[in-house]
Image (cartoon, rainbow over all chains, first blue to last red; front, side, top):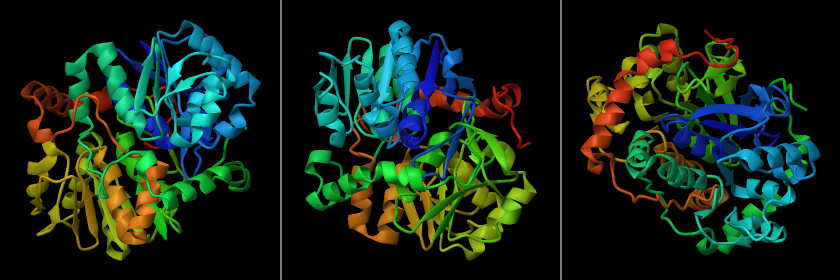
Length: 225
Length: 225
């Protein structure tokens, strides 16, 4: 089973690696990292670069389509070639796995009408505007579509999907392999119970995403545009 | 404040990205990815490559030394140049942050005598053999040394360190930013309460690490040896 992780400029690294670290360890899943062009793709911080080794144009189909989110989504929802590739890969995929505001990319491609999904807490309205029914949940399954809430939720959603693909015993073994027995040092909760100060700060940060990505340069050569 | 993340062949991606995603968002922290050579470094799965853009030899000091773990540690503990660089960077760092069996690298460098640490559950004996007092904990602080249990514990430990550096309010804002309100789909626990089947499978996987790394080739050119 081939899992194709789609990168775009300004992705969030943990959106990719959280689910990757789970799903790459499912027996029989072979991971590939794909993007518009072969080469380094810069994460949102501009301080980390992941290598894409296959072009989307050279990826006619896949078994598991993996779409991360990140501030780059604000630009990527206008990228017609990316949306066309997502539409094509989703059509034949056994599973589509979208994380965080990466779920918006499916919406922008017109693939979410009537679908039950989750997404990053601050992206709920934008995803709902594409006709999806957005739940306040860590992960949601609707048929062959599994969606995750923000960033680190890719781990929980990845374990959930690993359970669907390979069974609960394998998923629990992977949970041990990545030692996922979380203890957030300042307690758990939900985005909706976070302090209004924290919510306001994160929203401000998100609203400045496009400017930050435009103005910051990665300290490495990027071969993707 | 400069945070230097040290890569070596066969690192585990989530060991790096879990803590990076937290600490890169602490105001004033600038991340750099360093390795023996500039270029792509292959993760343990051989399906993901991260770009190192500074040589360890060109990194005389840092403020926050970040050491991930992974199957590659089995080889790297014999890499004298790496251990010398870790010793040098640790000497001047305000903080040293080591994850998973990456803690063994500090031990192999002779830096753990009498230190209180945690590590990946299956690496406890090997770390203790270097003179450390190993706790069964998600993260442990001993002075300027913060250690994390396996892989995903880099997130919890990163939030803990973010709180020490920038205060609890900032750490909680980052927790919201990465939406770290975990809900493991098959429940929480500890490595020690995992099923004996899962424990045996993970140990088998770990014991074959050196062979797996040697035999698998990454589908991209590696410029690091």
